Image (cartoon, rainbow, N blue to C red; front, side):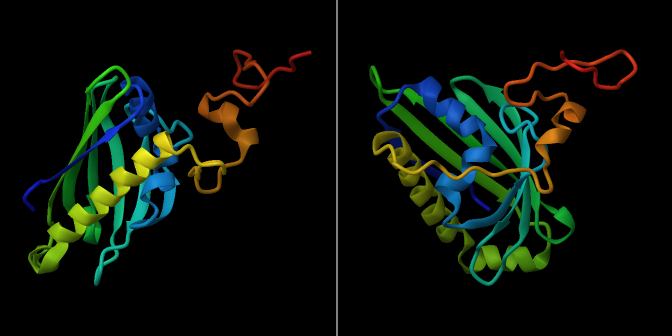
Length: 193
């Protein structure tokens, strides 16, 4: 598919916008109008290496898509690689380029590119996938702008890891809230008191 380019201007510092975009856990807060069943692949939800899986809500075709952040050049550029469709044959990229437009203005340019992996997916692209992707991308950037400029009263939706249990955080090298990580050399957890 020919790349889709959309952009918007957000009244917020570039670093703040980048940090929000780089945290995949917040993606449902501004993209849930065209994706569903969003789940993180790992408890680490931000920066290079963070990954997620979701279902795309395209008309006549609802593929599963996996995305992973492969480049996080704070605060300028964020690049994700995607794969999805039948047997994960379709490949693509999602690129966010952020540029400063003033003291507290940030221009966010979103580029989406994909290569269909099957004949059916190529046919669906010719039947209108590109205009649909452009519409959804433009709507999501407007919702992103609203998150920063209108500051919703309710907490933002956050994705989680499927089957995640916070007590297992030390297994993944993560800390529990309010508790310092305490480990022994044998891999067992030592008491902190």
